[in-house]
Length: 316
Image (cartoon, rainbow, N blue to C red; front, side, top):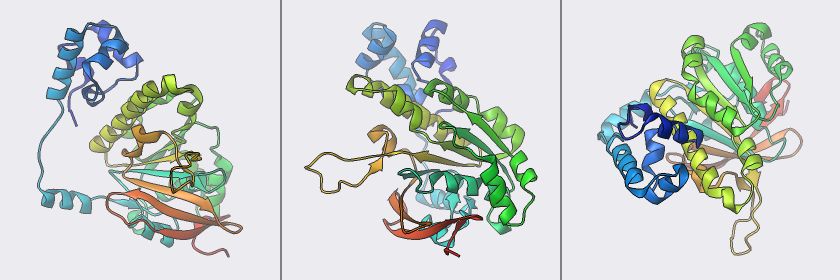
């Protein structure tokens, strides 16, 4: 991760900086992935200028090395937020971790948003109760946030709902540009409100609606990668957890063995989350969570339930 911003690059003047920002390139890392031909086409410059920009970007990407022991110590220092379900916490290796992006995917009504509501309550609890004594910044891209439901979860668990609602900052977004703007300028609200949990519900909504057709696929991938790198930069700067929900898409390729639904946004996003959960419906209020992809946890499943009091382990 680079500690410099695009504005620090000597190869960029004000005009080029504005063009890059407008096109969704907000970090030095996002430039380092491009070829000179791609960059020249994107911002309408000659190949020589594009090569100069990319060379400087690559030279500023941090390549500092750490020992595996150092990384293990860093892993152990991560804090966790309980989901409210022991089964789901165990599937996640103890809960939702700080310093990680956790993706929750699934079809409609599988419990994605309900888990986000539960986490919005739980993160405010003290550590001994599975929280981080922090607040929440909730970015709602589909208009599904419900203060009534969050209040119900808090009340059913014996808490004052008003206090919990006051510690959840909510912003409704209407397009991908707005979403990108919020993420790029989120540092102030994180500091002011002691945010320990950032939620994007859902990350795919705007991109799937705005970037339709094969001719827009490359552009969508670039913007999604830029968003992902900005989120990872926040993890480096602040001790917080990031949770995003994602939609799923059906597989129509007859050559593939597994035709079950899988998370949207393709390869541009697929390797960015640290943990990826895939939810599906069980019988009645039962939901099944599968560890879809993780660098440190096995592919396995668990059952949890949706109840008045939120995410629980038993139907009653």
